[in-house]
Amino acid sequence: MPRQTFFKLKEEKKEAITQAFLFEFSHHSFEDASITAVVKKLRIAKGSIYQYFEDKLDLFLYLKEESEQTKMQYIMHLNREDYSDFWSYYRELYVQGIKFDKEHPLKSRFLYHINFLISSPAIKELAKSWKEKALMMMQQMIQKEIEEGHFRKDLPLLSMAHFLYTISISMGEYMERVHRVDVSENLKAELPLLQGTQESLLKSIDDYIILLKSSFNKP
Image (tube, rainbow, N blue to C red):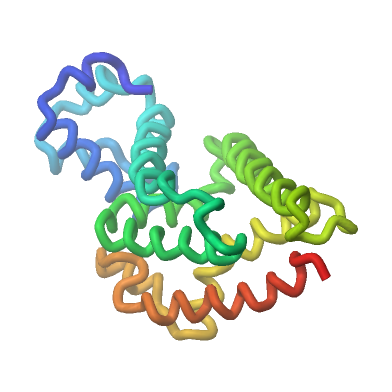
């Protein structure tokens, strides 16, 4: 977590530092992301960054937490009980994700780029723990649907969770291949990742849901 000296900065300075490093980590590997390059653009002393953060990893984790908290604001109000079935709820999570991407493109690009940083020695073990946490959340959601009689119960819970997790994170690749959505170009152009592609994305989700229903729903 940032040191207290960072939290005592004026909001505009904190925002400038946050935005600058979100951009840097969105376009480079963890190792290649340069604190020196960023502080030159900000016209601040490099040493001041280490008054605000313990090290480069501490800074990176702060950016991740800030981005995830912003995204959570778009989905935390969603309640499964308000939807007729799990898949209507699942679809709405993506609808809100599109809205987050449009309104906070830099944070969205940062979170997307994390998927390409998991082999970094500095965050490899952390990435494993992030995946385990996501799988645990998937298991809890699936278990509830099983208990309420909506999902089948003849398959191992972990297998079902891993399958849904894998499908969910592969959505971007599916869109690029099938619906010609150029996420990479949007990233380079500093646009929202899903710029101009909402219809394609929702079509992808709807196609996936048809397949997922046949796999998960109780016969």
